[in-house]
Length: 304
Image 1 (cartoon, rainbow, N blue to C red):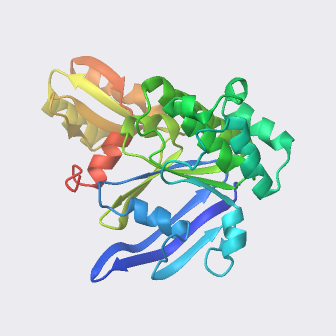
Image 2 (image 1 turned 135 degrees about the vertical axis):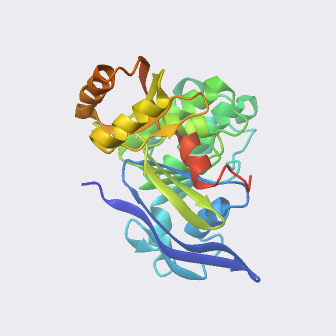
Image 3 (image 1 turned 120 degrees about the vertical axis):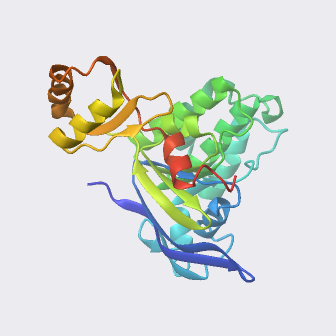
C-alpha cells in the first residue's frame, strides 16, 4: 500500500472576518496524480500557499512526508518541489547553466542534472539560452529545477496555462512518467477539466473553502458500469429495472436512461428488458467525467 506523503487535516484559514478555508482534509499518496479543482475564489491557491508555508493556516495540521510543515519546516520543505507561478530562470543563461546553478545550491551532482534533463525531454536543447525557449520548454525546465533534489511531493498551480495542445500533452506525459515510474506524488491545480481527466488518478473538488467531493478517476479493474440505454418505451424500462433489479434510473435530456450497475449483471438486465418487449436501440458505457464530478459538486459551477 502506497504511503501518504501529503496530509492536510482539518485546515482552516480566515482573512479578517471571511473564512476562505473551512476544516479541509485530504491525503495524497506517493506515485499519485491528485487533481485539485474548484471555481475561482474557492480556496485552491490559498490551500497551496499554506502547504508551502507562504501563508500560515489558522488551525489544523499539514504534514509532508510525515513532517509537520510548521514544527519541522526545513525537513518538510526538503520533500517538496513546487511551481506556483512562473519558475525563476535566467533568460540569458542556457537551460543547463540554470540547472547547474540550482544544483550547486542544492548540492546536487551532474548525474542528477542529466537525469532530470532526460525526464523533461530537454537534453538536446539544454545548451540553448532560455530566452529562446518556447513557453512549453520553459515550463519543462521549471519542472526540471523542482525535481533536482528528488522531492517526494510535486505541487503545481495551473501548470498548463498558456501552452498549446502539443505542449499540454507533452507536459501531461512527463508528469505521468514522474508520478507512476519515479513514485513522486503530484498535487496539481487546474481549471482545464478535460486535461485533468486524462492526467489524474484522483480529484478533490473544493467549493467555498470546503472539500465537497473526492473521487477516484482511473481504476485498473472496475466492477461497476455506468450505462446509457436508449429504449423506445422509457417508462416500461424504468419500471422493469426497479421491480426486477432494484436499479434506480436517471433520464437524460435526450430521453435515454442512465443506470449504474454491476458489470456481471449487464447481460441479464439487457435480456430481461428484451423478453419484456422493451425495444432497445443502444446500450453504451457512459464515462463518469471530471466535468460531471465538478459541476455536480459545485452545483453547476455557480461560483465560477
